[in-house]
Length: 254
Ligand code: MG
Image (tube, rainbow, N blue to C red; front, side, top):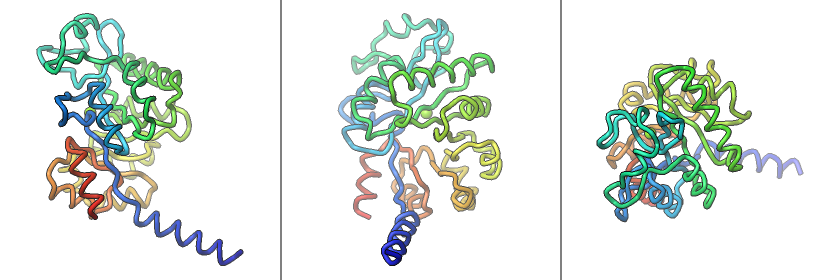
């Protein structure tokens, strides 16, 4: 029995040390089949590809609808957060799809929960609005029974702090802005960093430091194969890319 226990501990340790980098499709898998970023089809393609996660961007419109769109400045719009939902919805994207609501996105996410939805909550002009957006996003995720199938990322420290305060225990929250050390992120009770590739290349020591502190490391947006290999070799937990098919193949060949 004791031997079996020791073996189980060893296997667990080895698998932890060798934990493989996971693929996150940046704004969904949009570089395929006439898809566009942040559309229902891009999420579906990421699910079909079978990657760990599919990232999306959430903005609140002037009339309070949560929509999936990169924004605020997007396409012909000066600021999608200052437009009413009907205006944004009326215009078709050039592939024929329309801007999805967050609710529609969650319905698609529910169809295949093996791919996690990585929800980027975009910065909004006031703390009051950011707090409301966080509250409404958490409520929608709970309503769709997807609490364990989503993770959150944000550039706004206030949004991350609101998530720490209001999200259920165990929720993954990673900070995007690149200006906090791993120790500071740990202190703020974030569960990981999600930094630009140049920030992490300037601070490669943050990768090990995060792991020592029990934080995850995600890096964006890595589209070059050499960079992908560098971050795989550095042992990051997640790579966010516009080319999830390429990265998935590289990891499989490895
Ligand atoms: Mg994003």
